[in-house]
Length: 298
Image 1 (cartoon, rainbow, N blue to C red):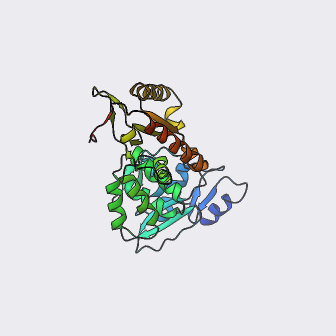
Image 2 (tube, one colour):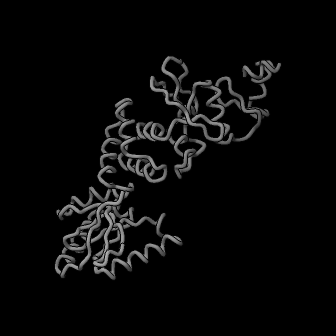
Image 3 (cartoon, rainbow, N blue to C red):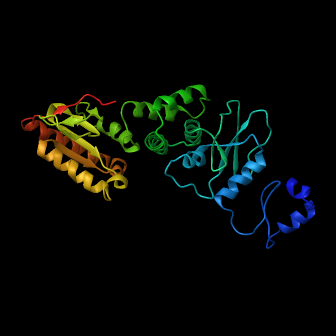
């Protein structure tokens, strides 16, 4: 409202125009939307930045999405802002204020100041409490934003330790080779089978050196592969056709293959374990085909 007063609009006029049925809308203390109806997400962000001042930086899921994470942010989601620790502004309305002594240098997208992706991802993780959504977010950040797990771990080490136990555990999973949220679940599920530990995410070639695939898990001693296939990536052209071609290469090389969709890892873990054990035993009972495990490509 300070800007309105500078333009000659008295506080009383602004107050009346924000009453129900009037043409303006009060978003936050001192912040007025000069129209009726629901504000857009952009208007909410601009209102939050006006409320918190020039030092505010957008972090959390909003920052992640605006830097390339393929997730939607609803208009009812809070706007998570970072502010220097010495400022006194607190959370209000839809604005979640976090005061910090570690203010990052912002990146700017579409005129908005954003926390760098590693910081934004971990600020969001610290607000979560359950293991699966944290695992999903970190895996997506690595895949979609190209973040290095080592960079995320370094950011965790330099920041507050509050709420970091689960992110630390998930990053260790990713460092061991989990490329997706589903693979993190798969690693834990495999250990329930009692089978030998597989190799994760290594290339497989036939006896002539021709590439076959890079299975999520591979038991070289019996030429057995496990693929965690996601509907999102494999149920539409050209992804689905690529999956069929990959499966044909497995079959031609004689590799025993089990495919599992991510939802079954969560909803049918016992059935998946039984399928893995049965398929492994079947693979072990027949002569091993001449396929080999390639060195990890950098």
